[in-house]
Image (tube, rainbow, N blue to C red; front, side, top):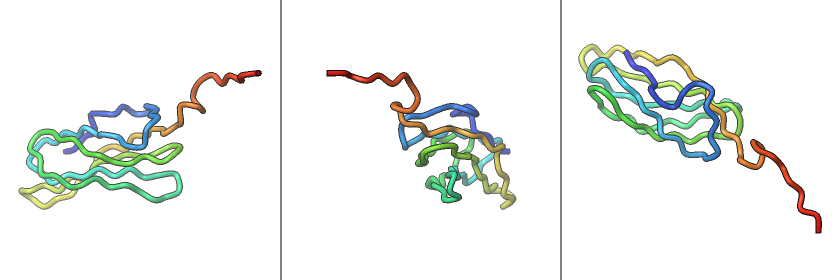
Length: 102
């Protein structure tokens, strides 16, 4: 099987670039997909891993759905991880807003 170890479901990020940590139970070719709110997506480079690996994807503003795809290098079978949701939000929208009066 294949699983996303990081980030966690529901995490909020201020930057576009995200590193996703993935683990597998056996030798596989793995990539990670980030599906954006508008239906477009960012797909990482595919890497052959035997235990775990790091993958880069680009987030877009709002909710992004992440999942990992693994193709077994022994059987050729494709499996997908559970989907998780992460939020890309600009820091100016996340915190307190202040107004400077001069």
